[in-house]
Length: 117
View (cartoon, rainbow, N blue to C red):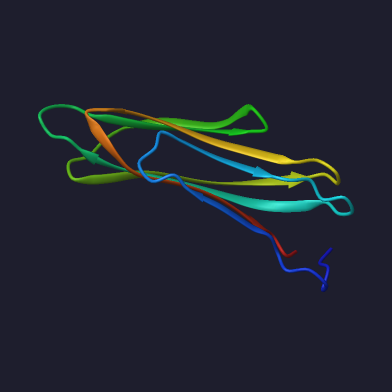
């Protein structure tokens, strides 16, 4: 149920070319929240042979999503959207971990936007 007295929460981390991004969203004392989580990992192929890049997303320490793919020549990316309901009084801890082979990390972003519904 929507509360007209609060703006939807937005949390974001731009980790740049780091291999890990974290978001620690504190608990809310009086209401359940629903978040849409978005993670984007951008890489560049280094040339000279095959390359791969991977992304793993953990929610409250548990692996929620993982993927490793071939890196195409030039720039490439991996993106994922997830939804999570957070009970009253509980935090939401998000971690995105990356791996690259034959590619260079360009940018890793992680965000959580509260659904208004």
